[in-house]
Amino acid sequence: MSNEQLYSGKVLVAGATGKTGQWVVKRLLHYGISVRVLSRDAEKARGLLGARVEIIGGKIQSTTDIARAVAGCSAVISTLGSNAVSGESSPAEVDRDGVIRLVDEAAKAGVKHFGIVSSLAVTKWYHPLNLFAGVLTKKWEAEEHVRAVFGKDGRSYTIVRPGGLKDGEPLLNKLHVDTGDKLWNGFINRADVAELLVLSLWLEKAKNKTFEVVNDVEEPQSDLAKYYDLLPMA
Picture 1: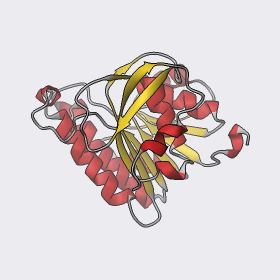
Picture 2: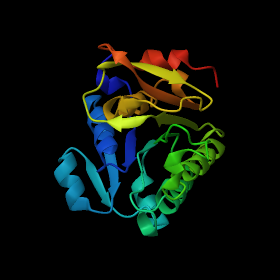
Picture 3: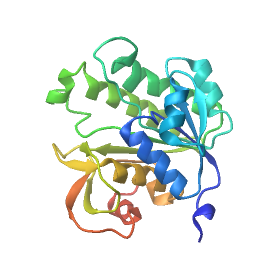
Picture 4: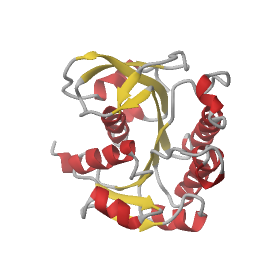
């Protein structure tokens, strides 16, 4: 099967100018998938992502902008992440409310699949990362909304909870996956997180899964689809 036959819909990437978002775009283009991004800085996005990507200027704080961005898309991949403790870039505004707005507008627009980057330890309120304006709790609240909206009515979701994010090419490491938020620490290449989310577009075994993932050992991988086989049935 050629790459172009794997997935024929258009995918909206939110958070595409971030390091993980850029990898999502790269892996989508690798598989010949049509990509649109929502970015508050369209010129920056164009410079980073290139001419093959459709750019919609807008903010995750605006339901009107989000509605324009999701129109005509069949899937959304969110790599949204906060970078301030207060204001428009805070965990409450981005990791929770931004994702919730994106989920709701995507469902209204008929989007069928929603993939999202979350984090290890989102259910652990006492984890040190929560000192950053409760970021893990905000991500957990967003996860719950994703599951509630995209876990029914013929829609699906995939929630990836990575460890600490590192730079590097995909498919260079064996991965360790688990469920139930039992992993406390670990690292993973952003490129592999992106690959797992892109694969979720067409792998039935990836549908309605929430799981943690970190690097195991350095070991070249032919593909990452096999890791979905290690997860319990939804």
